[in-house]
Amino acid sequence: MIWRYGAATYALPAYEEFGLSRASEESLTAWVSTRFTADNAVLSLSGNLPPGLALHLADGSRSPAPVASSACPELPAWFEGPGGTTALMANLPRSMDALALCRVAESELLSSLRYTMAASYSPQAVHTLRDATTATLLCLAEPMRGQEVQVRNELVELLDRVIDRGPDEAVLKAWRSQIQASAADPALRRGFLHSRAWDTLVGAAPQTPEEWVQATELVSYATVVDAARVAARDVLYRVPSSRPLSRRGIVQAPQWSSTSMTGPEYYPRPEVPQMRGLSLVLGAEGVRLRVTEKERLAVTNRACAAVLAWPDGRRLLIGTDGMTINIEPKYWIKGGDIVSHIDAIFPHDLRAPIPARPPGAGGLPPRPPEPSRRWATVGGLAVAWALLIAGTVHTVATLTVPGSQPLPPLGLVPFAAWWLVRASRGNLRALRRTRASLGLVGLPRSAGPRRSQP
Image 1: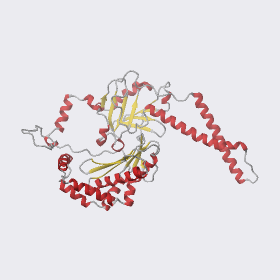
Image 2 (image 1 turned 135 degrees about the horizontal axis):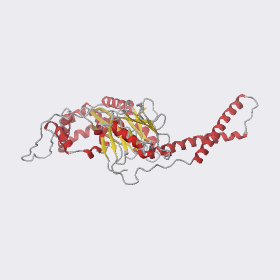
Image 3 (image 1 turned 90 degrees about the horizontal axis):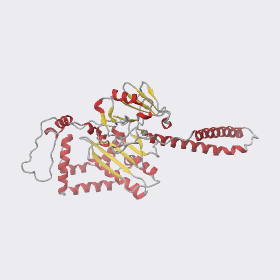
């Protein structure tokens, strides 16, 4: 949800309610006066009305469902998530066609992933209602060990298969029969009562159980294909972190900020080599964290959802786009000035006090390799590059100059190429481990720490 909506509207349930720590009697009373009103409440009961029941609610205005925010400027898109699960999320208009598409999608996933490939035991497809006009299709599958790529490919190709081949008519017939059979179940009307209450609150057009059942007759092969086309244009994929996606027409969701910022720049303390290369820019409108030359995070005071504040000075900035910046002042030169700047430029009503951490919390991440080993790595890289270049030049000369013979030492060229690939992968893994220990990887979209965490 955070990758789709950011730290706002329909992604807020992904966060803990940090603001409750600063709630006062006055603020709660003001909130109740605008929410718990006669025009903003619906009571639904599945039994008899209790005698003498009365709801003494003040008059007020209806609070409409929020307009959906967006953290993805372009769709379809994908992002990497921890673990091996692959999922897709797509919004489409509320209709019986969307509900039928969900059943078709689940049948497709079960047939391919469970019964044919044995790659995922229980793939799922879920249809939920977001507001008065929009439904959400969510499909996910947890792969068996070693089947991550196959599961990812099946989910990414799911909607295209429905568009190209159409839904299975037998699946549509079984779905239609199941809904029609439920019309005689008394539980259907009880469920519809609560659904009617929810629809009334969000402003959706009311529908009777009979109308709902009759709507299944309007669902056809063509209408389900049309619903799949709409979903395919709006889909967001979550793929395993070790299995990035490279598909034409599907872009990577923004991982880093494009916001530019000017101001004084701050650097980590020299005794913290784990943070070498990082820097903070404190601007008049916000804070920018530089991870690498191309990887930067920024949170501005105009687009900030919350500032989590610990008594020891730690600050966690959460942008409305879901980007977060975690600042431990003890690791930065003039860390106190950084905290003072943050507290001065971000609105006070965004600050959420967090209880003190236990002693020793916020320790340093693991140290990088010792200098001698780093220099050995640099030297090895230089030798490997030299061998690879020399081998390439000599191979070209051997093929183009008659009578040339290959040199025996150049048998080391394949080894040099292998060593280069191995070293580069090792350095990348080390960089990712260091960033993870600093709390940087995953921070472009993070729900923030739980209160039980340091």
